[in-house]
Amino acid sequence: MHEKQGDIATRDGRMDTFVCHPEEGGPFPVVIFYMDAPAIREELRDMARRIATVGYYVLLPNLYYRSCRADEPQFDASRIHQDEEERNKMWKLMQSIADNNLLISDTAGMLDFLADEDQAAPAPYGCVGYCMSGQYVLSMAGAYPDQFAAAASIYGVGLITDRPDSPHMRADKIKAELYLAFAEVDRYVPQEVITGLPDVLDPHSIDYRIEVYPGTEHGFAFPQRHCYDKQAAERHWERLLALFRR
Image (cartoon, rainbow, N blue to C red; front, side, top):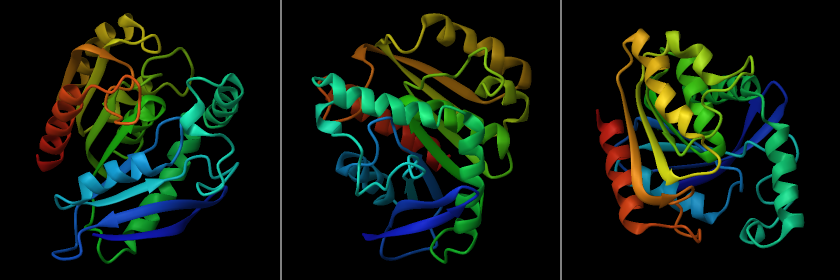
């Protein structure tokens, strides 16, 4: 596996980014991995490596780059579930990028970067987002319909809101195949969002699959979380990699 750390130029600065891909056989189709709220950590790098090892060029950007670099975190991700102060620091950073338009702008920088990477195959690309970033992948599929052929949102929050930047407002532009996975128990994703998604997607003939994982909680795919569910996590990997293959 080839790995590197680099900076991507964006409208607002330089975004530090983890990149990995196989050593041989490139160029490789690209997957952009949008981080969850607890930020870049080895847990996410390992997940990026798992995608890369089956033949993908994976980009894992630090979405908090406006506030801090990934190697200089402003909170301890391992303590957010038991330490309110650390959790509040995370919420503050999360709110700093709550506008989907910021991430659309950042993704323009990622696309420019990828165009110059010898080991990155040309578009179309895939993308995946968890929790906080579930909304971002839908926004990217709508903002860059010719660049993204596959987008997966895993227990994504903020998919349908009353905000002007709500991802569902771009549904008419989406060409990508979508996979939308949810936990059965999730205080961050109202049930009406899940049941309302077909009303948003069906009028535009979008190819999608919505799946609720029985007996799971928000965060079930992350092996370092208290709510990790191995069987559900492995199913999510099966679904995700099959989507990217298609």
